[in-house]
Image (cartoon, rainbow, N blue to C red):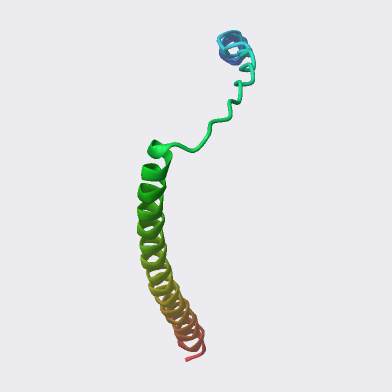
Amino acid sequence: MRQIFCMSIVATIWIFGARAQSPGPIVIQAASPAAVTATLPTAATTQNSGSVETAIKLLEQVKAKNGETLKKQEAALQQLDELQQAAEQMKIFGKRG
């Protein structure tokens, strides 16, 4: 009886100790809105537009490759589903025999 009582005391202390060690909420202030400034097109922005077009072309190529990868993954998932269904059928037929 004394052993059970001691164990319950230890469990109670452990539970309250765990609650006491949990961190309190952390409050973070919101950032102030940034000021928006308008700029006129200059020679630097026309040069940047060329690099932007290059970046867009590069992103389109990456998107196309990602599309191909997704198609391959979809085909692999389809094959895995078919294999899983075949394995389940084998289990069913194995149990019958």
